[in-house]
Image (cartoon, rainbow, N blue to C red; front, side, top):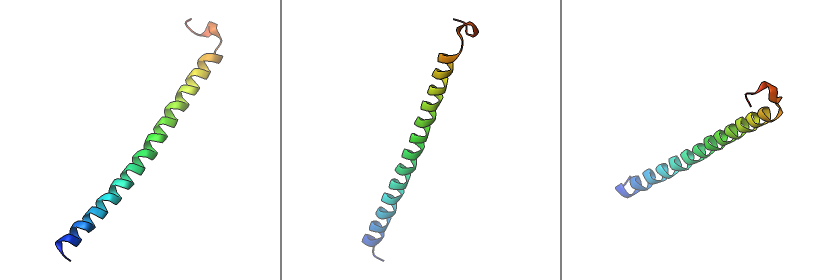
Length: 57
C-alpha cells in the first residue's frame, strides 16, 4: 500500500467518523430539545391549571 493510498484510506475513515459523530450529536441534540420542550410544556400547564389559592400569587 502506497503512502497516497494510506492517506486516502485515513481521510475516508476520518470523514466517516465525522459523519457518524455529527449524526449522533444531532440525534442527542434533538432529544435534549424535545426533553426541554416537554419540561416547559408540563411546567406551564401545571402552573396554568393549579388553583391560584395554592400558589404564592
